[in-house]
Length: 355
Image (cartoon, rainbow, N blue to C red; front, side, top):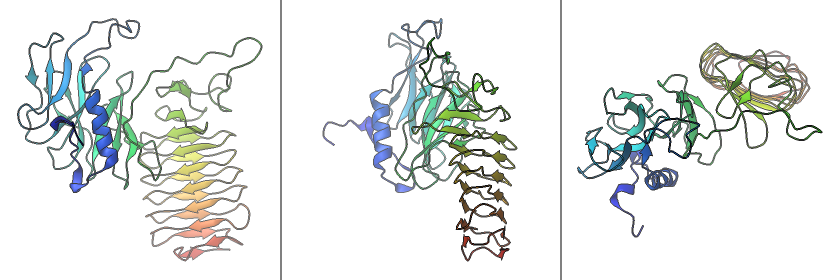
């Protein structure tokens, strides 16, 4: 690439040269200067002053994270590691810096104090994790990861706990940036505005708003669940911990359980329910739902619609009690059980099938 400096080269895990990864780093190189605290143009959000400037540099032969005063004095190497360190993000309060490092053999997300002390690894996966971005309140970090075979956007707590996948698409999703949205307001007199999903937000008895965009989770949902609205206008509920409860609405939604032993119950339209680890309990609603188990011994049950069931690694139990011609795939378990499957299309990997 003509005119591209050394500081924009892509460093990928497992010898992989990813266009998505390169694009993410090029974008980071274009905006690698971060301020320890928000700029003076937004004093209402942070009534402080401009602080340190952090940046990525190859001046010592390898990519490192540096910091300096706002006038360019006091340049300090914060990471000083023989491996790649870069792709950084300041926390909104200017106290912490999240960054990507290859010091453990592949790309992981680390965090440290703004002076370079207390460097800790937040992710630990054989695939590449990169591109951290703090939430406006500093409590969460979004990042990109190749851990599921292609680039997807994930989020976690600022200490690395509660890692959950937010996107799921065959194409690459990367370069997350956590924005700020105004709090929800009631519609103006005479109508107008958009209503929250049924059972969520004001007027629905929902939980307090969660997530950066102020979307309220439905009543009965665990407080640790993050609720957003996806690009298709559906409610998206993402778990961040084990043992959570997800209460669906009468609208179509996407529900992704977190750490295991979660209870997920849909109510209405074409819902997508998925577990990740542990023994999850997924119950579809009255529509044509898609239920996908995780790696543990899950329980998947339908209700009224023509559902699609897909289990994974554990010894799962599937109750296909909706309409005929439902699709059942039991996955890799050795003692999978299916009942009420009369007229359904059940794959041969299901060990015990009761019609």
